[in-house]
Image 1: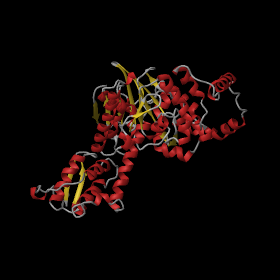
Image 2 (image 1 turned 180 degrees about the vertical axis):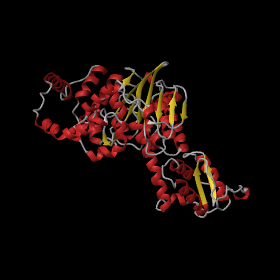
Image 3 (image 1 turned 120 degrees about the vertical axis):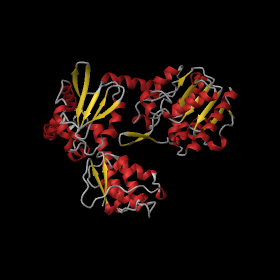
Length: 476
């Protein structure tokens, strides 16, 4: 037997060096032994063989990434499993891609367990305040399912950069002093504070947000396994809250409906009458238009949006930039192009020599169309009927701003401005004269550049986008 001694339970570099030497020497998995700490060789155990330069080999990045995760698993045979995979890859170089293989599937499942443990650590670490001689500090005790402290601690350094904190676990400790992250020896539960004065406020908040009508015990325990409850201050409330859930739900159902806000209802009714449903209403200013769009009922999109989002920028701009519709961040902020696509647009405008502050930026559709996917709201392309319904607002903006050049970003924007479908990729960059004396130039939407998976293609398409904007500057 060949014995490889590792310095710690997560000594990936030590395992990799030992595994390489063993495979180079032709030691099969059944004759390789991995032990942690100071190990005394058995009667039939030998040390690592001398490396053989003529037996060098390379492994895939995918295997290295997988091994770095599996090493953190608490299973005692993880080193053996990884070496068995490494040995088999000698004859099967693409083994790691065969996810139906028993060993590969086992390793992937352990890596998933490690990733899940890291996620739970981010969710369930609870810091408690400590008044020290040199000021305020925070400490937390946590018992991760796997050895994920060193992998997860940088998250807390980014999340709480101004706090001085320590996370204590049975595997080791992590300390952040505001400048650097350091790791230390294992700790015990009594080394961390058991409570602080902030905890009562947290429990009150947790109890007040507990919705008994939406209680699903299995789902809750799936997200918050019982193994973590003993270290969560709010866990002391769960038993009582769940026991009362049924009675509280019946009380909520039986309670009479609350009276509507009559003042708000009258205000909205008046605005709807004066603006949204009055075909004779003509906004005289952009501010008046922005207020009126909040009561728009020309299509169903207003129901799921936070607010209507009109254009922003110079009120007498020579350049108008028209996008598709507000995104998630624009819907919340009430301003167009403030999210990732807006950042791409700003950078491209600057590179083309155009100051965004001199332009008027808006969208063809004023409400965010989306569908829920988990906690996220995913963009959905507006229908032709929705674009047509919103053209009234876009035409009003064009009438008030009186731009010389209009840039349409994407097919939806072009349809909203031109009232006809165009092939953006073939008609882009060519000025299209309009009856009012303005010129329209179509190009791609910045979000198109964000979706391109290939870096080379993304750079080439971005150059084309900037060239389109330079043509706009020439027209101005």
